[in-house]
Length: 224
Image (cartoon, rainbow, N blue to C red; front, top):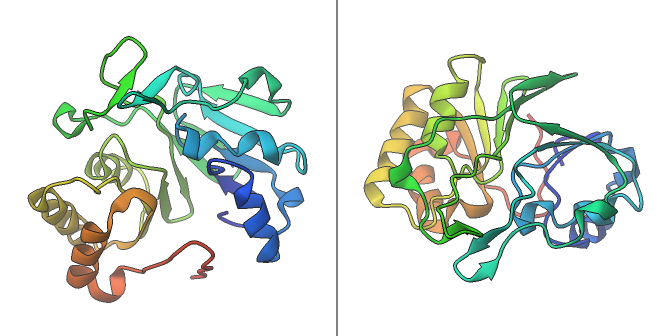
């Protein structure tokens, strides 16, 4: 939940709603939902949100493809036809009010996680991945296409001071984590690593960036 009106991803089930209510969050006020990509743990909760809110949804048109993590199905875990919300399928960068939706980030194939595959066995290059910019914040879902690629592309177009989200560095080499941290230093960025960044990567980034790396956990609230 970026603010009271914007939700970036929805988790796997309705648990995000239950937890949010315990924290005093009113999901009925959500006006926009942006889905970073079509993995079940990012899109799964959307079908439950529509029972309590009527937001506009922004999602890449390729997010609904059948996809796997190893042999396990990892795509949309319900019948998409049951989504009754207004859905905007996008395949290029757009702006909607204060939200800049960014897709088509170039990807280096050498950083692709081999376990992620499409139904025909091909590697999943996450052509559906969306990142968003609000004010001077860059938000990433999993950064499957490479957090370094995303930062390098976005910072050419926007004045970014913060990077928030999953960086997908759980299985990354120490060398790659070091280079990414140096990239954050190069652009003098403050980072909030979440979700799939990985404990080792978070520790390295924190040790290197000190106060410019902000550690948050589920249920935490942070204000600039």
